[in-house]
Image 1 (spheres, rainbow, N blue to C red):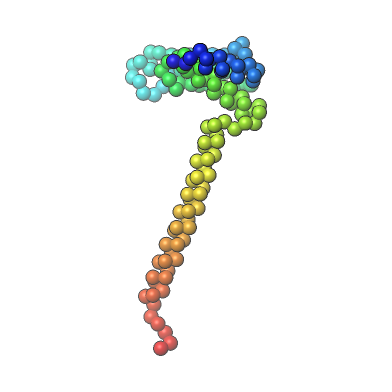
Image 2: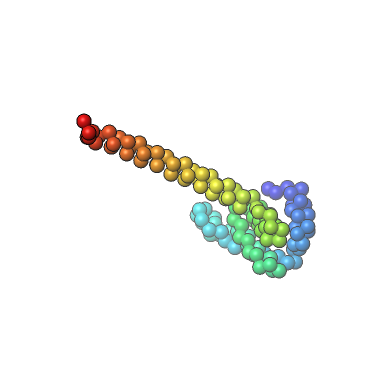
Length: 133
């Protein structure tokens, strides 16, 4: 469950960004994925549309509708901050960090492969007959 304190902090954040509840269109739709019959019967997935910007958020992180409402509003705030203030979201920063790590890893792998080729060529050079004597 989301505490009242967290809801109040989120409301303050929404006010700071200029998001009002009147600007939001909220729908509850059935989620998808694992869950069997239960997922087909309950509408716990929340779809938020911020009318002024046209940003659409779908949230189905939790089985609870109330929690998904909170998470959807939080994600909307993140996207608006990213769009208006140019602040990169934590998720985007994490993606960029992983991309840099992979780039570093691939550079290391390339150097290792070139070293192996060089060692192999040295082995082959030893097999050649010696000329001149």
